[in-house]
Length: 94
Image (tube, one colour):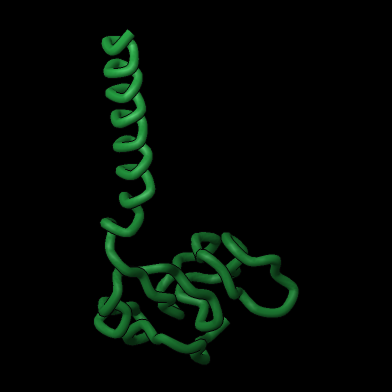
């Protein structure tokens, strides 16, 4: 009987360990921040302005009111043809 209990505990520990690994993985990917004006047409993550539903709705490349999630700290150094990315919505040609 103790072999069955030991085996059950080993299986439970393995499953638990796998679940913890899955739960931790997104955090290990690093912190992200919203970066406005860096997404290409139709590739934004959200906030594309009036008349849009959200993700993948930007109408032009580098739309100033559409954001893309980028690695924390990289937004303000992301170069576009119109300048750098922004942590807040910006005016850009439509």
